[in-house]
Length: 386
Ligand SMILES: [Zn+2]
Image (cartoon, rainbow, N blue to C red; front, side):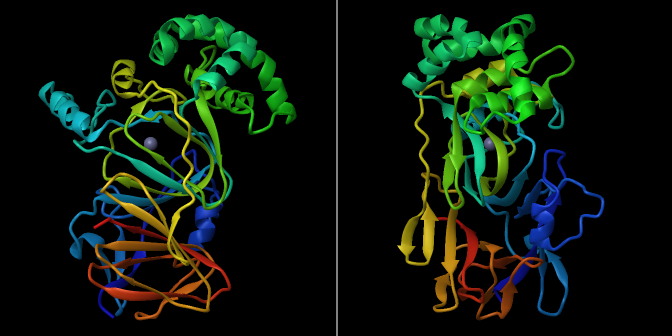
């Protein structure tokens, strides 16, 4: 049946990745115990997906469709990722042109803008997932600056100059000051972390882990301040969160499915050994309180939940299906499906989605139906709102 094909994505072996989740999703033996960090589905030049035709041929997805406006991924975060901020679309256009004019090569580590696009991101948790997301609301921020004794000297800075002043203060202070403030704190909490007495709901847990992961020699990563300044969010399976332009965030631990606009524009803010451009970061980070908005998905039908966001680049929905009733869908745009739980069949094409062969692509205009074979199956569906 034309219009529906099996899809093979690309594995990224970044060293922060877990070794079991993605291999089991792909039914790949990971004999070398390599990290399998991300599984990419889409048309990104660094990982163009492969389409399998009915007669067993393999072709690049780009032979069937033009570039997708989104990149669809599975992530397995074992070691925490860097703190990141992404620019708005309007800012990305201006900054990309500026760096081009300044003659900074695209592959230079000093290059902050790789393209002229924004990079909003939406992620749904596949199990317990932990992340940092935006600045804490005022009461919580004041509470933590008062109660973590070693950070108390930051309270007057916050009282005097607010969120922006506080963040600038910790991001611009000399490294010797970072070390002076954080060393006594880490000396207290690292032994507790190593004894296993800290809970994941406690910022100290992640600060200690970050120190053991990122600090180089005597020097302490200043991103550890942000572990206390940002919201520590715990998502449960099926819950999602959207990261718009300017919202600082860092993935800490867990597996998720993620969809983002096609862009590589990342400004880092610590928890990394990579280049940090503090000036650019401070230009684009939204220094304001944020109450995390956890998305459960809006039911369009009893079996389709859509995670709504304000962006036009992508849409993520979850299909919850069992054997009783097929879900009928007409693809308005190119859609990618990946099953993360159970087993289901795309009726019209007879393609079975299951571990080992979890993904399919549906070309625009194709009508299709999905029926669970197992009692409960979950399929994530990437598309574009239209
Ligand atoms: Zn990001």
